[in-house]
Length: 107
Length: 448
Image (cartoon, rainbow over all chains, first blue to last red; front, side, top):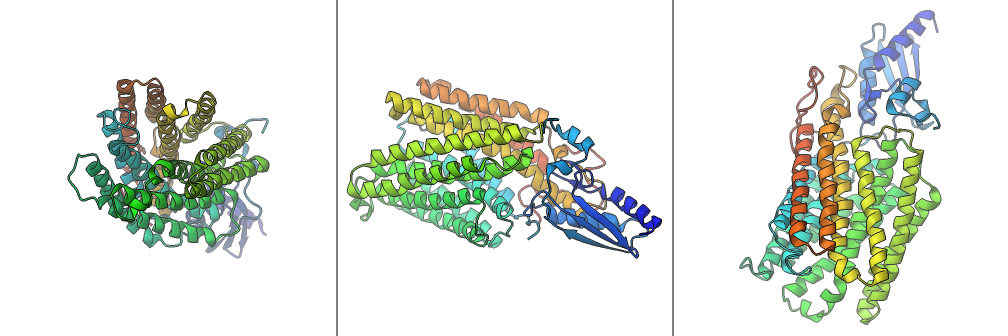
């Protein structure tokens, strides 16, 4: 990966913040739904998850991720993989969002 | 399978159900049925079936069409069956109620209204059970919450079968005359399978999953969950199968019901402790209004268990059955349903409106579709009214009961308005309310 690819990955992650989990009310990057973002010759490969496989929002989240990544200059194509391995866990949430959801320190 | 689609007619189920609830509440406030009339009389049966079928069963069917696929991560077997089922349930109930009104002398209708209404209801429930049953069948082995739903579906079959037989007895049909004692001995089984099995057991299963999801709690205690499941199944099996056998042999119904009651109590205690454990272990400390109100509804269920045990011990259960049934139907089930509708309706509305444009434009949160502070007062009024009404029944204050139910009716109207506001996106601030590409949803039908 070149330094430009690193920049592009950062830009894609930033762009993905427009996609929110409707129930938790926070963007999917800070919630830890985005497992991996990589770039290969302008093609973005994104691996993501949702809270549960049957969640009615899952397909919308996947489509939203593809839509937002497409808008990043330099991205020529987007391939989104939805996985539930490993399953999403609340500890994957960023500290700032944990605080706003009222996570207890003991937990 | 990733994700499940929106069921087009879910909101229609909810709307029809709320109309039935309001009708029932208005009739009670007007003094129709129990406690002004006999608890087993035709007028009371009108109210009981408006609440148990029109409100609770209809709303539960709609919720299950959306959430059974979520529980088992499989698509609904046949969405095209959902609208015919709603039509059959609604018309069947209307005709059944006309039959009860005829029986009560309010209406000059033919005696066959009751069996015709019951037949339409049985057909409607058969469509619901077949649809959900095939969805569950495709997902074996079932996770525990889904097993509760499967047991609930078995119970609605028992309830409907007894209801169909009662309609034949009450209408004076020749075949019904062969079972002269059925009404006396069979009503407890009909009520237990309906209120306890279909409505409560199913609600327990769905709420297990929803509460854990909304509170970001780990899975509950496996031993307590297994105990709640096994004791609940034992209660339903002893109550329904044992009850039917006892009816056939014309002895032992009370023993079967007592054993079923003890097993049900054990199931409720295990379930209550498990949910309390989920609450304590939750990651999300700041709970939303729907979750807080679900827990308040659960407190009503705990109260039912404690009061039932106390009344059995003091031998006063027969004189307090009406109060307990009211607390189950309103404090527990209606409270739980209204609390969850307050989450489900905005959530589905959000998916329908903003799901298709996600990633292209900023979108509001589900929480932006509601105003919790404004809605809290309606929930406070609802629970205070329900508990006051129960108390009034316990102390035989009929007028006080009607006043308390008037408060419950006002709260229901207020909560109904909040749900309509959510469908209208009325509380979403500009400029997020209707970003480019988003369309205001229809009030009663989901786009899917």
